Image 1 (cartoon, rainbow, N blue to C red):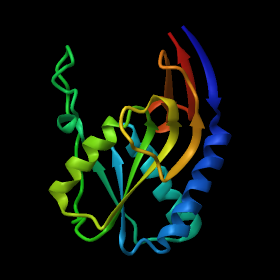
Image 2: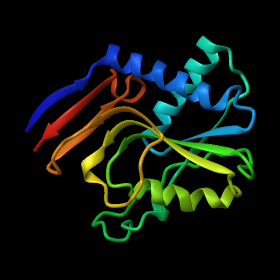
Image 3: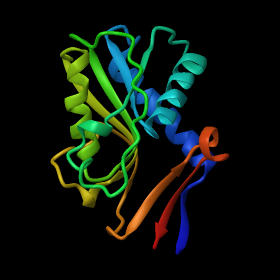
Length: 179
């Protein structure tokens, strides 16, 4: 197994600030926008972006939620081991709001399709956008594209993209792993 670094901590920091600025350009004060981090790993990216928006750009009115999509996936019954659900934490209604889904890696698009189904339990958004740190553009199974992307990566299907967050893994880094 080989492991190649794609992004280091400094590069991730720069990308996060760029993504935060792009969100500000499209959502101004976030009065009618909610951010939804997809469990399990999109929540770290979402929390980081909210911290940047609040601390560096003084935007205090941001609503942040966490959405678990485990049982909305079309492949959850096909796995050998039983799945463990994560926690959904959305304490606001998304009816007539702009929703920004946030995830670490966009691979096949199946997680986003599941999120589109799951969010309907919380209301009908007026608009839904997608923000990802890594876009694996040649691995899509569904016609889903991000509105905001940190880095676009062309890897072959046998390669895996892994995002490490300092909150969970001890340091920020993105790796390409070849099994």
